[in-house]
Length: 243
Image 1: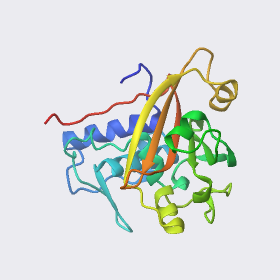
Image 2: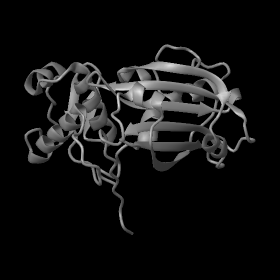
Image 3: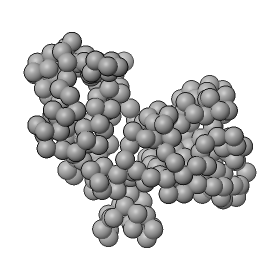
């Protein structure tokens, strides 16, 4: 699904670097320019460069080597298909890698859809950790992690500070749970007044809402990641092989 919009600056930088890799400007095995060099050449902020490099690393275009820099791997096979999905991205990446803040934590009555996805009794309470994400200094998405209340106990998810590790890694270390797969659903709806204010949205612009249900190998739901994306600032794209 593609929406007519201007991609955020980090996404534009990703596209520029991908084109250079494909054109041979940065051949496989070569050292990618440093963060400072990219900042100067493209006239963008450091958070923008860091976000773009993270995407390229997650997609398999580059490798990072501690103390040496980032090396080009080349175009991965089916690069679009290997792209980290919205829900997956927020489970794997450390919160400190993204500009943003925790705006809400605590146990509260979960929305009906979340209750159904977590397979909880009607009107059950669940633990919520909600973050506001910024790109280039502007709010671009709201990410909510919903968990059965018992899974939040003994973790740092109640803290207002950003985690220096991914949610999957944190919950595995603290609770011993193993994430096996994510089932994503995407809907469109109009934002609430509070959501419009949080995201700085104009009137009459819908939200794209991604629900990623995280399940263990047995199929039991462990968590739900809910991502709110203003439809005028984002596009969703997927690719897959035809067998």
